[in-house]
Length: 161
Image 1: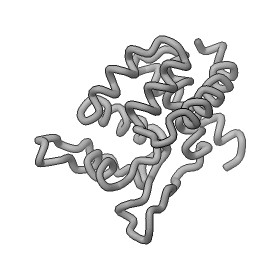
Image 2: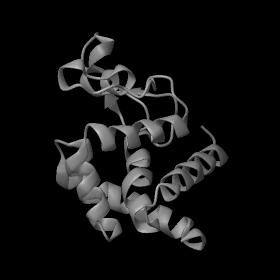
Image 3: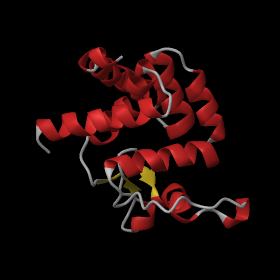
């Protein structure tokens, strides 16, 4: 992907999350930092291929594993009486993936949403995103990277704050 595409995707992500009520610091430390850390703004993307079974692979800008997260986003979880939002993260646009993440936070990952909303600084947001939303196995390393990327986006978009 060329640089202008990265800038356009980053701006779209920034605008989408700001429209949801998140602060400049929250957006840069959360979804923007995560998108760069997870995918370097490459879409569509398949990462974290666990074996040859595509159901175990990670998809999209936030690297959702199809089973269980991607499938629940698309079609829900009848056992928990959750209806999906109908977005297939394997092929969704950048904006639709933001909608999928927002849906998941509001319907499945409610504790993560509470922690994310409580974050006041870029650093707190990066930590909340990695620990509570992504549930990363490499907390310390991922948080450091996400903060670094988030700080760069905060500087780039400082005039939008």
